[in-house]
Amino acid sequence: MIKLSFLLIGGRAFRDDWWEPAALGSAMIVLAFVIVADLSDGLTMVAVQLFGLLFLFQGLFGLLSTATRETNAGRLADGVKALIMLAVAFLIIDTPLKSDWLLSWLFALGFAFDGLSRLATVVLVRFRRWGVAAIASGLELMLAVMLVVNWPFPQHLNVPLCISLFLVLSGATMIHFARALRRHDSSVSIYSFPMLCGRGWNEETAVVMPDDSPDDDTIQHMRILVWTPTGAAAVEPRRPLVDRYFAVLDKEGKVSTGHSAVEMGPDLYISHWPAEEIEPDREEIVETLFAGEENDVAGLFQPSYEQEKICWTAADEEVVFTRFHALRLRAFWEGYRRHSTYNVTNRNCSIAAAGALEAALEGSLDCPRPWLRLLRLLVTPSLWEAAYIRSRAAHLCWTPGMVLDYARALKRLVEPETVPWRKKLLAHLHHLIGSPKARDFAR
Image 1 (cartoon, rainbow, N blue to C red):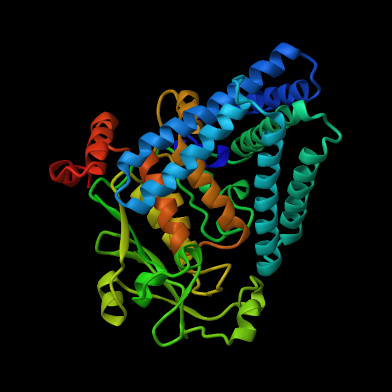
Image 2 (cartoon, rainbow, N blue to C red; image 1 turned 135 degrees about the horizontal axis):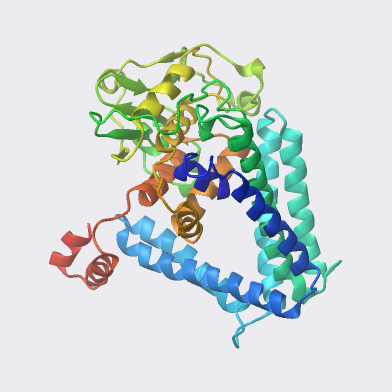
């Protein structure tokens, strides 16, 4: 979350005072050790209650955000996540529902599921430095076991332990960010920092441009175009998660993974394809997902969206941005198209689209009070959602479904709804009870 927040706020707000993130990060690490060592009962109690309130606010904001979702599936997903957040909050906060035992098991199950799923994808893809990611997943599984066996910390310190881990990781990220700001001059964008992408997807697309460089005001829109697997194959979804985020079988029995592209104006279109269609046999699917150079193939770039529609079909989803940096997007494209090498899990269409999106949105939330902006971002559910999607992509690869959800989350952060949430909520309530007029408004 910290990395994505710094990217959206931009480097101009922090470069002159690079020591501030370093000082705050160091203070967070010290605070983490004070909390987990239980050196101050009052401090530990306050930290736990604040942690619970954070989940409470996330849950309440999540419930309110259901009024802004356009589909019933989106409302259902937001509602379920919000209810889980509220349940965790009431288990943490000092209420009659507080339960250290139940909370330990909930956190343990969450860490175990996350660690196992990440470990499985890391071993499957085996990208560069995948061993480090595998070790991190293993440590997450060890933490899950520690939470349920109450060793080496007693049960009542499980929540403080999780808080301390969050503070240590966030503090280390801030220190790393401060060092990067000091090491690189203002011509190197934050998107190009190695810390922003452990997979190295930004190494060949370094955006060199001063923080205060003027933008092209003639460009009005950037479109993130997505062909979902089910939309591209023209089939009904049967397995919601697999069909949305990975692949489906079309009517001819072929695998459809969908596609992602980025369009800005009439002269910039980012759409990366393999030069020859990749159709592995069932026995070869696992090897095809290997991210090594052995699976690199020749690729090509489609010239325009109109040409892509003629050759294939129209995108079934899109997200439009009006607040972005057009010249940064052009700089990204100049770097990316130097070669057309394609790799299913290391240099595909969605990796290109996600990189273009991040490069274009760098500094989009720049403001005179960056620390206040950072605090507001950290308590915004959409940032949590975007950061989680980003972390999952780093351990597997970007897919069209991930790009779509990521773009929607960033859209809510960068260009929030102009309609007051109270009106949207009332319209949503009327929609639920069947008012035709309110139903039209809620849409």
